[in-house]
Every structure is written in structure tokens, then in C-alpha cells.
Amino acid sequence: MKDLFLVEPNKQYQKSFENYALTYRKINDEHYFNKYKKALENFQDYLNNLQNYSKGNELPQGEVVTSTFWLIDKKEVVGVVRIRHQEVECAGHIGYDISPDYRNRGYGFQILKLALGKAINIGIEEVILTCNIDNTASKKIIEKNNGKLLGTIFDEEDNEYLYKYSITVATN
Image (tube, rainbow, N blue to C red; front, side, top):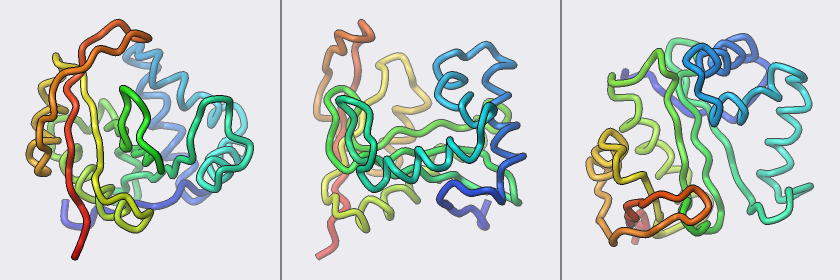
């Protein structure tokens, strides 16, 4: 676990990322599989889109500049984190997921910890995060990374209640 690091998505990890995407299909998680299936259809286009989004180019309507990183452990993609350069209502600055094959092993804590370092580099001093009130794993991960609960909000689009947290990452 000590050799974990974040990388920008790239060809070197293509096979590993394709396997990552397929784990979501295997467990019938349409939300995340749909997020990643373009990588299975045309990997280079998928990488180009992520690169463009990180620079604010060709953003879909209503989207904000977003930097994506892959969490690597022993040359395998075990997680994905998206850092939005602006807070998004009901989504905050950071969203992450860990491969179903690697959950409950501490990777969630590590991916958020590493992402907070990237947020500082982007210029975000106070990171806002949200999680479904039923997602106790994510709640623990955020709180273990010094998340302070701001309250509960309702996401009308997904028809669910979320906890909203703040993590101050500014260095003085």
C-alpha cells in the first residue's frame, strides 16, 4: 500500500484500465460502467476526452474543468478520482471510485488523501465533497481525511439525500 500513486490516464495502463471498466459490468453497476465504457470502444478517444476536460476544452454542456487521475498499485489501476476545478452542486470538487475487486482494503482513504494533494496544486483551498447518506464507507473515508460535516443536502436529480463535507487543504 505504500507504493500507491496517482497518474494521469495514459496508454501504459490501457489493459489494466479496460479490466477496471469491465469489473463494473461484471457486477451490473451501470453508473460506473457507462462512465468508462468509451475506453473499451476507443481508448485513444477516451484519453483525448479526459485530456480536453482537464484543460477546459470541448466540455459537454454544464460540465466544469475536471482533472482525472488513476490510482496505481503494482502497475494495476485500482481506483479513479475526478477533481473538478470548481465546486459542483451535489457533487462537490472530488469524486472517486475504487474497483469492486479492491474495495474494503484502504484504497478509498488513500485515493482521497492523494487527491487532496492534487487539489492544492490546482488551487483549491477548501475541498467540498458529498456522499449518499447510506454510503457509510465513503462517509468514513471522508471523515478519516479530516472532512468536516457541513450538513445534509437533497439531490433532486438523483432523488437522494447527501452528506456535504469540507476539507481545508490550504497550506500557509
